[in-house]
Image 1 (cartoon, one colour):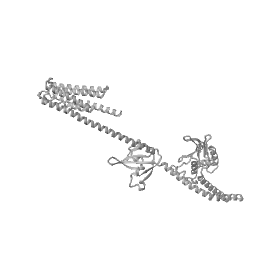
Image 2 (cartoon, rainbow, N blue to C red):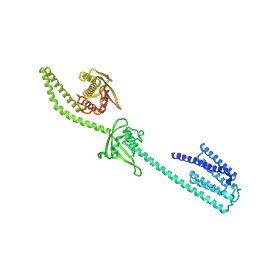
Image 3 (spheres, one colour):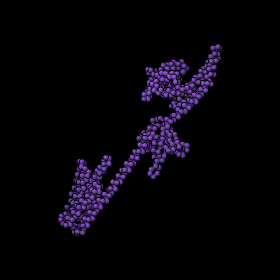
Image 4 (cartoon, one colour):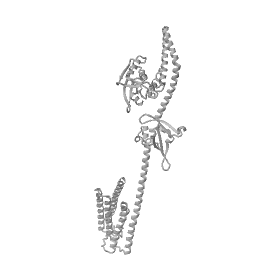
Length: 563
């Protein structure tokens, strides 16, 4: 269907070109006729001859308009062409009849008719037209030779033609007509074969190109090509998804403007040998987030043309962000395991001496009466032992697995208990305003003591961040993070000092803290407990504006579905 449409459009263009060419040739002869009419005294041509040329030109113009109108009003191209061939043969025959074939060989117009006939209707059509023109030409010359028709020549010169000249003239023209038709048809056939072959090659190339793009677009690895000027030329679907950049936006842009982290790949002299086999880079993606990408030695290849001339590069990369996150989690797990061993050792080595010290001090306080400095020193000793006891307990919390004993824990009730306890601590100040937004019956299926520890650490951190007072908000509700999986959401927010953006990735690291009296175990314990229940935790913070902590704990239905 597409090929038929293409052929029709091509023939339409050729048909109009034929009409325009005929008009141009006629205009040229019309110009010569006008010139000879003006300079008539210099040319031995009768006025009747000039008038006849005017008539022929007018007739050609008129028929050209008719051809165009016939095409516009739906006449088929072939029928239009047959009419043009017929009229052209008749006009040429009249010219030969009127002016003879002595001074100007008007039979040359027959050759033009044969040529465009072959182009439009092929070898068979061209041979038919060659036969018709041969018949007309031979008939005119024979009739004139035998004087069966009156001589209509308007040329002043008269020539006597003998039988040999007439026969030679006719035979030469007939042979030339057929040879011309054959040669033109051969050239046209070769052109058609070349066009067919070109279309086949083009179709095969398009199929290969489509296959190439299908493969490139279907892989989950980012593929990008750049030219020697390092302008981006292709960017597959996976590359868009990994980096967040749209190809339509970055096309023909410089690589250093989009992903400058790739530029060391081209600095072979500066690139260490160890990095040429594999290179990991961290880039800023289109969405503003940071992602880790991995490249290998095959990721940067030369793009070459048929002559093996280097025309660009191919860069292949993969998203290693999740792998890096897994490595970080694995490292944290390793640290936690080490801390667990330390905690077990500390618990064994420290708890018994601490119990003996604190017990002995309490007996001394009961048995003896200390006043002034001695009593204050005894208080310092007791507080020190309490701090050591809390430290050991925190270590054990990090090392202790999630208890198998679980129950439906009322989150709202636990918060009230925790808040009541914190209000009597030294960290609390009356300048803190508490806002509670409780949803009805928000329960998590967990160990109550561990839920209390999670809420206690989050609320205590919020209170300690607001030394000058502020607003403490606590909100609970049921939330659906995944399809058919509900969680109990705990939201604790404050208007305190906030956390620096550079520190947000470290807050769950053991012993990381910005507090003067902190030891950096609160949030790691919270993260450990939440992860043990397959829950989720998220921290959002802005310096000098406050922090929001989200914790999601699974409810009973999810636990039951897992068991």
